[in-house]
Image 1 (cartoon, helix red, strand yellow):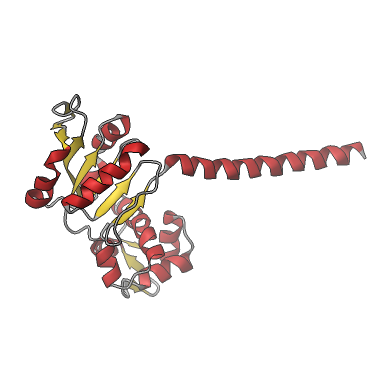
Image 2 (cartoon, rainbow, N blue to C red):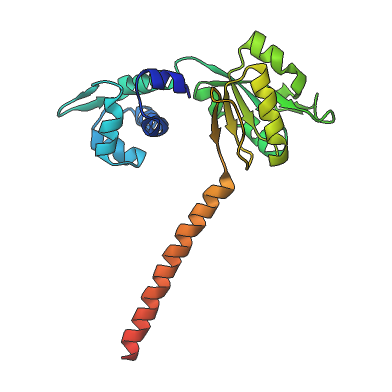
Length: 230
């Protein structure tokens, strides 16, 4: 995602965070041969309210037609442009443990405008090993990747105790966009964009809601039992 492109168009961060969901919904509609969609239908497909969707899309311009809705292909292109996805972004994945290897095997990067140009690790026992159709490269290759291959995004898939060192090395080489899968907070300069993916945190949030739901069910059962006893 290109935050700079969206920022120049004056799109709020909260709206930017929802645009990929709209793009995915539009892609699914296009694959089904649907050429136009109403705001209500698109909102339902993306899991948001129609009012929120219309407000988000208003930042891109006026592409809807009253009584007809949005042209699927055109709106998908406008969102892709806003996100900076009309070009391929060179990506390097750092850390070839189980998570790094799973990410390296993910085919969705290419179809969404991201080109994984390198897999990196600092462990000499891993460097040179094949992962899919690529070979793991040393961290020392970072400078050349930025200089010669225009590496734009670094993905950190290391343990938490290694993540800050990796981030420092990425920043030193000139990378200004980082996707962090390590369960830690990174300290980076103000001009570096970091997005964090913490699966354990998401599971904890789900556990909270599940506990609350279960508690409500238990309260309901207790009330039912009390009514029967009366």
